[in-house]
Every structure is written in structure tokens, then in C-alpha cells.
Amino acid sequence: MQTCRWSLLLALFLPISCVAGDWPQWRGPAGNGSADERNLPDSCDPATAKWTTPLPGASHATPVIAGKRLFLTATDRPSKGVLAICLDPADGKILWQRRIGDDIKAPQNNGATPSPVTDGRSAWFLLGSGALVALDMEGKLLWQRDLANDHGNLCTKFGYSSSPLLWRDTLYVQILRRTKPYSGEPGIEGPLEPLVLALDPASGREKWQHVRKSDAVDESLEAYTSPVAFENGEHSELLIEGGDFISGHDPATGAEIWRCEYNPERKSMWRLIPSPVVAGGLIVATLPRGGPMWAFKPGGKGRLDPSSAVWVYDERTSDSGTPLYYQNLLYILQSDKNDPWSRGSKSSPGIFLLVLDPATGKEVGRTEIAKGGAWRSSPTGADGKIYLMSEKGEVVVVAAGVGGRILSRANFDDGPACATIVVANGRVFVRTADKLSCFGK
Image (tube, rainbow, N blue to C red; front, side, top):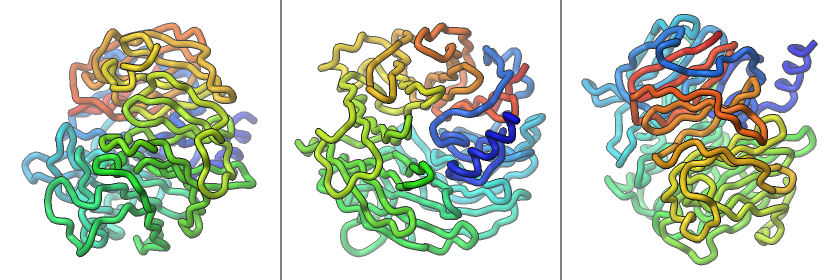
């Protein structure tokens, strides 16, 4: 009965047509970093891995899983390209791999950062270069596009990193960028525009293109966020955050329904990394540089005043990781104790996992994870546990809830590691710089 109820919920509310046990996109089957998995291990000690597969090169992309196929990307040093790789999640065996585009040069980043997405019949790969490729389960090319050729240079200061969203039989891609690229030629005449695209996943043909205007300045025009779906059975919105605004769009046309400004002072270096998250029926947005969190009710119209927020959590949050919504609680992993917002924050120094009541924004718990370091990946919740990973490859497992007891620590010593930890079919998958490891009881 539990499996049937979960499958029904998936069919009604989830952005992707998948089955229970899959992890079809960057933030999982529910789009919020959580999964309904059970019987998962309390520790991810590399010595206890079910299997570990060496990979050709680094990538910050999160693996995605559908049935007996696991898809990920990796840079390929010999060809200076990016590979799409398919593994068997049962044993880690590489089933196939193919070069799908060129790598890019960017500070602390590469062209394999956007995460793929799958519906169990096809897989779509978006690269930092602008290459967008659709493959079938056996690695056969279905179609390919060059978004940079079609829409101009995608280059952002630290490398284009947005992941595509598959929702309602549409592939959504956002390109929030400066009017002039940091490097390379614009590729088109005139200033580069911030875009939201909707594509037919079967052909790659564009269904619509929306120019998302912004008054932001310089680097604040850029966002490394990804599109997020909101749907409650009666109302739906495509959520886009970056360029000094969070906005809701009609998923059928791209038309902007509402927007709220978060940088009225026009600070020029407020690029944004964490994506929005839907939590308890509210839209929760993290502001740049580890800034506050705002929560809005869906269904807004026009230009919203910040005072319309249901609540504001005015403390140091995360400059990098997207929050997790799990078991009716909101989890935020602070990314760096030196995030600029901390200078004016009451928050203690160090790295904490914060727990908020999503209805009120009130902090109900916090656990110190580390004294410092960089924690760029987004937290994952399943089986009463929260899985966290540092950029150096330290994995910490914390008991879910307000108590936040640390269950284990393990060091992979394989950084930089920024991919989200994946849970699927009773297993935990950890992608570090040059390998993928699987854990289970």
C-alpha cells in the first residue's frame, strides 16, 4: 500500500515522469533534495563501499538514475571534452560513454557542471559550453543543439552551471548572464539577453523563448541557479531566481506572472548560486552571498514588495548549496564561514546545518558540522538521515530532525567534490572528483 500511495503522489505532483526508487534529476524525485528511500546506511566510509568506479575526470554534476541506468558526466583530459557516461547502478560497471561536447575553462569549474536529467527512456545532457544533447538508454544520439550558437555566449564568470528541468513533457533551460561575456566573443549582434527557454524533449525544438529583463548590474546579472517547478494540483509556476529577482512564470508560455526584487541597492557582485525550493506549500528563496531566506505564497501577481514575504530568516545561510525540504522541515547547510553576509550576522562562526520550520521561518535546530572549510554541495534527505559533503570530500551523515545528532564522518580525500549525494533503490551514491562510490546495507 505504501508503494502504491507513493507512486500515485509521483504521478500527480512530480516534475518528471519517473517511478519510485529513481533519482531522475539534480534535486531528486520530488525536486527538493529528498527521497522516500528506506534501509540506507548510516555511514559512507569508502572502505565499506559496495563498489567504486574510477572516472575519466572531474565534474560537479550530480548523477541521475532511472531503473538499471545511472547517468553522469565527466571531463576528458585527452580530448579536452566532456563525456556522457552510463553505468549499471548495481555494480558500477560502465556500460557506455561518448564525447558530447567541448570542455570550458572557468575559475574553479569546468564544462561538466550542469546535471543531466532522465525520464527512464532518454537522458538529456547540458554542458557549460552550451551543448545540449539527447541520448537514448543505449547511448544513441537522438538530437543535439548548440545553445551558444543559437543564443550567444553562455559564459558566466565561474562557468555556466544551470541544470535543465524536465516537467510536463517540456525541457526548461535558463540562461541568466551579463550583457557582455567575461571571456570570448558574444556570438550574436547586440547585448546578450537573459533567457528562459522551453524545448520539446523529443526533438530539441523550442516551444517558446522568454526574455527575462533585469535591472541588475555587472556580475549580479549572472546566476548559477536552475529552474524549479511549483505545482499543487490547482496552481503551477516555473520558478526562476537570479539577476536581482525571483520570479514566477507560466510554464506553458514563459510569461512572467510575478517578480520580487532582492537587491534594490544594485550591488554589482550579487551573483546567485542556490536555487529556490518549494517547502510546505511556500516558495523559499536564498539570497546571494549566504544572505537571508525569504518565503512567499504561490499565486502572486505583478511586482511584489519584499514585505509580502510570509517570513524572512535574516541570518547567514548558504552561498552555494540549495536548501533541503524533508519530513516537514527545511535544512540549510552553510557553505563557508567567511561568506560576506556573516559579517553582519549573529550566526556563530563555523559550518552549521540549520533546521527551520518552513511555515514560520523560525530556527528550530542547528548542528555544527565543521569549524570551517567549503561545503558547496546541497544536502540530501532520506530514511531519517541527512547526507552532507564538503568540497574536500568529507561526508557527514546527520540524524534528521531538530536534534541533529551526527551519525558518522568519512573522508574520501578526492576533491573538489560539489555534487549532490544521490539515494536510489536502497543505495547511496557519492560522486567525488574522480570516482563514484556506492553504499548500502
